[in-house]
Image (cartoon, rainbow over all chains, first blue to last red; front, side, top):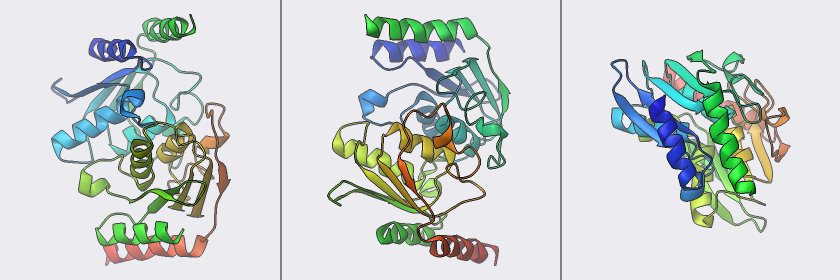
Length: 144
Length: 144
């Protein structure tokens, strides 16, 4: 998760919403790491999770990331939760919940829907304070 | 919608699930068109809608597609519905509902969630029979 936070902080320094993630295989090898790049790439889908999933899938040469785990600094939104499901990721770890945009424990609760055909094991709230503080500091700075 | 169906049929000929979409501006100019390419690109996020949204955003040089409309042959899944929201698309037209994977009128009903901060106008079921038949024929052929 510390690498995911490093990606989040790096995204924040680029002016992006500071969210980062890392995808690892079962031996702990890093398959992909990314931070948000929606502004830089002019791409509304360029959330950290989607960028990392696409990168890992390209590296593996498969649209399915069976057995791999994803670490994210914030609860994924519905778009990213669905992508995690489609990619067949094994486990989702996230640092802080997201009442405003979250799609796992809030709003659509995608993995609990009958239209969700693969759910990862979910481990949320692992670094609630750090995840929340990073975002709050970012938005406070932007308001100043 | 006929162009979206052409994209869907083209995707089917490539062995992909036959779903297609088109994004147009208010004058009717086509900004992007795409069919599913998840297998070809080895990318679980390469649904028709996401490819078209990314293409249109790249062309416009903006991560927001304000005022643009999207036509899809099938009800978007939760991933694509959320991307449509993030892209600020004005209207969503889709041909057929999707009980199994749909995220607009089924399952997560993303646009009805409090965590959804922009909803397009939605016009569904425009060519229910054609949209359903295309998919059923595709899956029947694969089972044979």
